[in-house]
Amino acid sequence: MEKGGPLTTGDVASYCHVSHVTVFRWIKRGILKAYSTPGGHYRISCDDLVGFLKQQGMPVSPELQDSGDSRRSVLLVDDDPKVLEILGKILSTDESLDLDTASDGYEACIKIGAAKPDLIVVDLFMPGFDGFSVIREVRANPETSECKILVLSGFGSDDNRTRSLEFGADRFLEKPVDANTLVECVKGMLVN
Picture 1: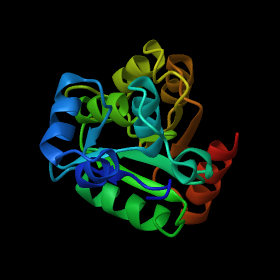
Picture 2: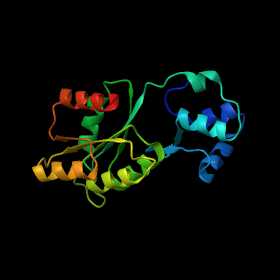
Picture 3: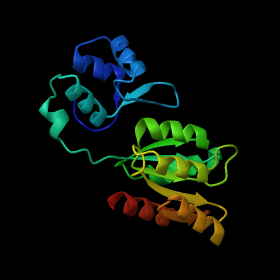
Picture 4: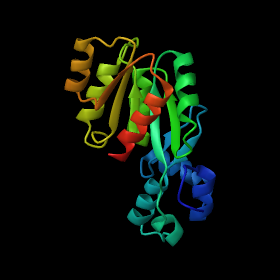
């Protein structure tokens, strides 16, 4: 097993020489961090597995611990499925990105807390828990406060830009955005 993309419960079970039911129990008890895919399957990051193994005093193979992970995780948050599809197509051209989506602020906060993405691309105006609330929650939580936040909104007024940055967003782009501009902005934010 090489360090890189997310691991399945089967991968972890095989590595630890236990059943996948045991891995489910570890996740449910909160001793192994995991996130859920839109299809309801658990995924575990290599870093979270390494942390778990060390905490439990279990051996960590050198390839799992020492090989660099150049992939970066990006969560796309928008209540419009077409926007999510377009953003996904644009950003999926960069194979170093692991993309996930959320269709509202509440789902976004759950995924952010579980997976702690490197970058969150969030719309401002969504029903219920809006983009401003997402930004506030991310910045208030010490475990997620370092996540980069890019606001992508169709309402690019000076007031919305200012409020977004005051709440803690790192950058603001107005929809519709040129594909090259979006890719350059995302790459730039992930480097810094």
